[in-house]
Amino acid sequence: MINSATSATSGTSSTGTATTKTDNTNDASASQDRFLKLLVAQLNNQDPMNPLDNAQMTSQIAQINTVTGIQQLNETVKGLASQFAAQQLLQGSAMVGRQVLVEGNSLALNSESGKATGAFDLAGSAANVKVQVLDAAGKEVGTVDMGSLPAGRYNFAWDASKYEGGSALHFKVLAANGDAAVKSTALSIDSITAVSMDNGTLQMQLSRGGMATQSGIKAFL
Image (tube, rainbow, N blue to C red):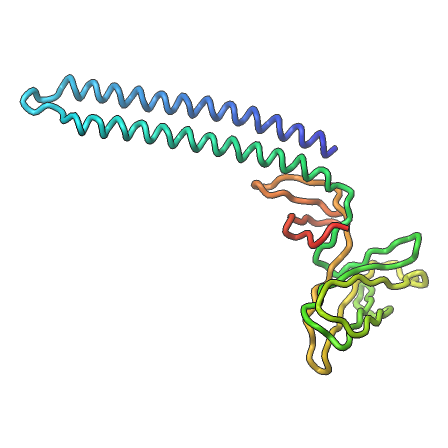
């Protein structure tokens, strides 16, 4: 499905680029024609006693050439941007099915092992780190004692085999040095189901819903 979408996107981009390029080439030619007609009219109607200065004529010709060059350069850049977007989308399709870490506090439940897993980034060293496992109502249904940890990224797993609730599980990280809390960022394990382009930015559809950009992906698992 992704490959078909990619091919369609690439085909549309190529056709659109060719049409735009032709239109702008015609515009540039039309501008040159208008300029030449005006220049000829100016020469035909100039005052013989005060003819058009050669330097002025050369300056006008240089100006129209500069404008035409800029138009051509703009079209070249647009064409390259379109090709880059199509290539980026094609490369992004290889990410479909990959597991990733994104910001969020949802736990991923493995039905085979019965483990609920998640991760977090710890901003600084903490003497005591504990992960609270919460149900949809925010009620604590379990904990994972991580002990003392230095700053860094950590994965954890909670035995959910005896959990009888039907709601999705979430978690909260409690990290502190005595009474001083240590900042942490909760990370969820998710997977990419589709990719698309939005205003030149690669967007990834996640299996649990929602979208993520490349900058929003913390790690590939």
